[in-house]
Length: 455
Image (tube, rainbow, N blue to C red):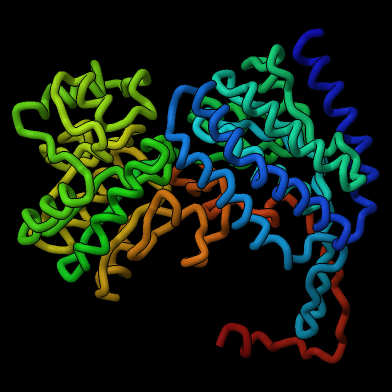
């Protein structure tokens, strides 16, 4: 069977299942959403092991945290939200909002998150009574299939139509089948590389994609270094740095540089000596391109590849950049635990360095500031073209939604028009519903005169 016919068959099954499922009440739908989230939570450890072994990237312990932690966070966020029938009544405006499913969602999964991303996208799709078909990454297709099998088993257990969640079978995972899915589904979610996201937006269907990451971290003069640096290290080495939300670059006051470097070393990071910086740069970006062979490896393994030694338990490599933006290729996104360091004299200069780095790569995604000065925080928020600015948190686990902030828990982070995306916020369940609006006529409301309108 060719890719077109194969996907058409999956779509047909999904439509039959979805038509049945959209008759479910809010309570019944929520029971199903909880079941699939809890199923992945319960199997988070073996799925993490499978993902690391198949993709050969990332860290087992961190993937457990991602699988189990995101399942909890997403369900905790979704469980009290209305997504079926009448969801909002605005008496003053005379508007009643009614939620409807969009139909069949086609979701492309990344190799960096072969469990967590499909789980999240399935939970928010099902929350709105949609069906969803997952296209796993070729380098993690067995993990993707197993993830969907676990969720399908949970559907069967609660009596829901199992074909509201389907997965492209491993022997059919190709660029062609992913392309057909995006063409034939009603809505596309593309979480992956820029090529796949571009294909989603070119599919002729509504699409949600992500932009390139390049998390800037700006440390203010008044920052609590003992609090901030461990967070930066944790964010940078999380899952060996493969997430788009991992801290990439640290921009700090030159008056506190030595203090910050000392704190990095106290927290398990190794400061790269000057004589090794050029060889490390060439190792990470040979001929100006990201070294895909090093993606998801540890700091120790990366140092070894560059020809120098660091302790085996090194969490991250810290290297002084030549300058911001195009002055140094280390200013770009690095899918491994390497932190580029910059120093500034004024806060405006520091924010300007972050801006230069984002203009180089990652415009529209996210940044972090460690600061207690409201004016500085808001200056960064106004100046930087990012969709999320996290204050005094861990970027890797924070901008995708955390209990300690108000960002929506998600696996797909929109980057707005800066990143060629349709949304500039975290993808949520409400992006996967159509909303009808009932408008009541109120003839008692006066019509304003031209003078009242124009003044």
